[in-house]
Length: 448
Ligand code: 6AU
Image 1 (cartoon, helix red, strand yellow):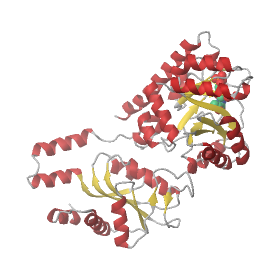
Image 2 (cartoon, protein in one colour):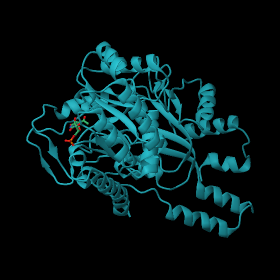
Image 3 (tube, rainbow, N blue to C red):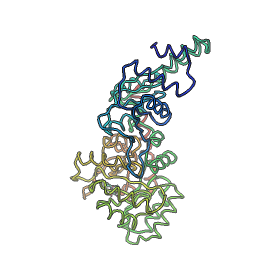
Image 4 (cartoon, rainbow, N blue to C red):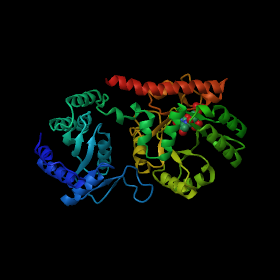
């Protein structure tokens, strides 16, 4: 037991003020040096604030959600790149909150090597963070807390044993790459993903997926309003998104949009206009306001650069407060397309300051998205793998989810041109949902 804990036993603390002093003493006992501090939001913020005042050292603030206006920074405060920041946290369990903070600080050019925490619950978080290069200094562990309470006659030995047993059977599992299961989006259930989402429409989408047990998007590429609305009525219960290309519908009017919206509210799905915007920000802003304001989601190419997202952000705020979201095309399903791995990587980096409006990516491979809050939308799917005669390439629903990492799968002609569209949609919905469940379960069994 280190000196600070011994002192703690002799003189218990009663306030955050005292706790911050103890942590300062503890950090100096450990020879931890830093240029500034950062509390993990939110509980550790008052502790870090008091430490910063007492040490007369700056504090940086990590935002849990990027601001939708102004600087859009994830880390706020006066700092210079390469400065060393000490993370402060109250409790470490899996280590995922510290890791999120660490990632944002590193991305902002800061250096992080250590974190001081008040209590280590000993469930694997410390070791996991160590694997990620962060040394954890716990003031006290849960077993030490129990030992101290037992020695003071406050808890029975049976309770101590029960707590130790709980710790031993509730270790946070790792996957083969040393990542926490809870951090790898492919292994995480959608409810946990929803909590990690920074775009509020993504949260709605994850909730819909869970409620409807569906991760199916219908590409309703038909040429009349009547056919579109008929499909929406028929298949609405099986899907979470209905995707349109309104420029192929010869009689599409505002009335069609209103009727489609009504069906989407009754059947509980979102509407995505697959516009694949690819122009300068101002043009896209005008196009969106004129033609797409009725849709919940739209697609854009990353090609024009971040101006396209600025244009849409402006359009969203010009319109109203309805929830809106964007899917950025990072890869294509068509044969011989010109997208390169570097383009895909740059597209992913580009959206970072726009996480409040970007719901995810249209892409083909599981490696594109690592962040659990972003959604992978994958087209090019049919019950039977193959291709059409214009370069579209198809994989089966199971491959799309389990191997390509799709969260939501886009199926068009595989349903609309089937002899029995409703039954086919039901079948695909079932396969996709089973594949999602298999993906998260199989990964967990692999770990134990
Ligand atoms: O199932 P299909 O081939 O009948 O339809 C696939 C749908 C079409 C495409 O415009 C769209 O998915 N799509 C996209 C999207 C969604 O952006 C990207 C892509 O790479 N491939 C693709 O087919 O409406």
